[in-house]
Picture 1 (cartoon, rainbow, N blue to C red):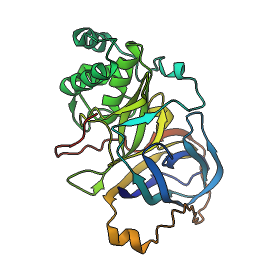
Picture 2 (picture 1 turned 90 degrees about the horizontal axis):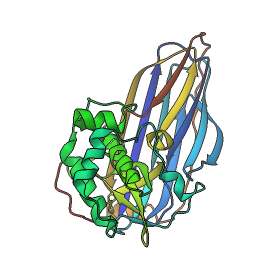
Picture 3 (picture 1 turned 180 degrees about the vertical axis):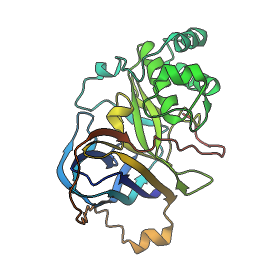
Length: 318
């Protein structure tokens, strides 16, 4: 399937920026079941300083905000070809060793509630796939999908205790539970083509667990399935902080407004033919100038939290 993705983020600041840096993880990965046919990133009031692959092989850009700016826009768009591998990504190939995905982080560490859920689950060491699917289903039953009740800083234990959250929370609870069972697990941020809409207010998130003989296998806890051709993997990490689409720090101002627009749709055959199927990948930047700034310091970690979820029945299952 060919998916067309458009993702625009606009920041507005309360005063002209003195100095600000942002780390962008907004370029999809080339992985099993996914190839990037075209991708571009346009920056307004920001300049690319460095491009590199981080420890998780996320394609990362470090950008600086032009001094004096009070608004920054990051616009990404492109075409991604996906194929269905029943959620299986394959063997581990990152820069970090596999054992590093077994240790808990502050966002994933399970408390008494999650540990009680694991006991009730009666995990079968001989059938990890069945155990992981039952863990996913149990989390979905225990934690209702509900927007506005958690933030990007909410821990797995906090979300589980209040019984509500979004896909980020579901992923953190699953990761913490899998690691407690001795199974390596990681966080995935990306896009999901929904069945009932094109335009969305946020990106999506799910989890992957490493199973002997299969490698990394994806689990979308919020939707109760394994990722199929409607999913685009962008970044992975030990938790949200490693895979957040945008993180940053600013001096002299704070973010007062954040607008996110995401659109994911299947590209029609006529659109595919008109693009010529070149399979090329491009990037461009546009900049505009601002004035000078003030002296306070603030830190931001943003992307409005991944909250995308399909409202219609999904068709694929690992």
